[in-house]
Length: 239
Image (cartoon, rainbow, N blue to C red; front, side, top):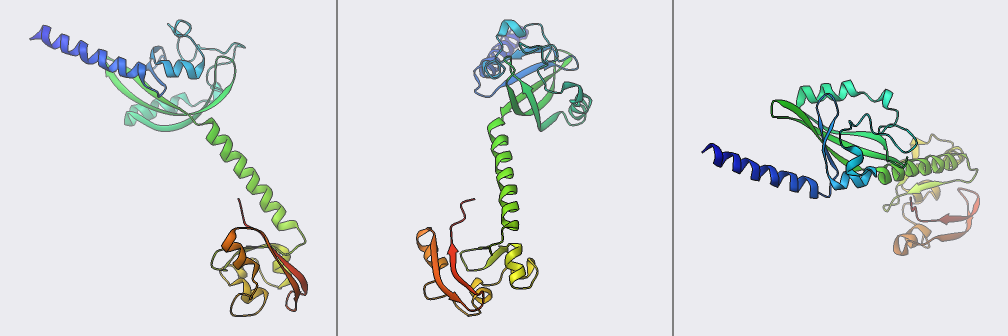
């Protein structure tokens, strides 16, 4: 029975390591406390740019880039104690963002998930990595673009407002609010034609109605007695 169980255990272990090594998700198994790399799959090696020979016998803290940088950026401020304490309390960490360097020094932002488990009387950490660099950069660029848009929206002298598909005002800029002598919040939710033209339905040639049909820019030309202006320019919001 003992021999049979050992054979079954060996088969299960081989299945695990085959699945581990062939997984498309970067994974690393390290020794708890020391950070010694016990196993690393091919996907993780590709992510970091190291060969298996280069990481043999190394801890994650000893690995360096070609220029001598540590694997974890700003490692001195990386809260290793918190990381290990969380593993001690719950046995797993759902996800934390960590900035790492590849062997060539390229920065990557990864989402790190980890679980602690017992093997042969000791503890190991299985870390699962996800490269989120492109997503984070896109989010930062979108945030920057939003800030720039907000800044421009509020300082231009032209009257500007954002209108939804139901002709309701979503927001206005300061110039718009000042022209109507009211606060910025006053206009939110009100129909644009009620505020701008003092009527109870859209204009016959309403440029916003035309925009809703074709999603193209439209201009209404004509003198408006309320706004004392000669045209309205309506454009789709592509943000």
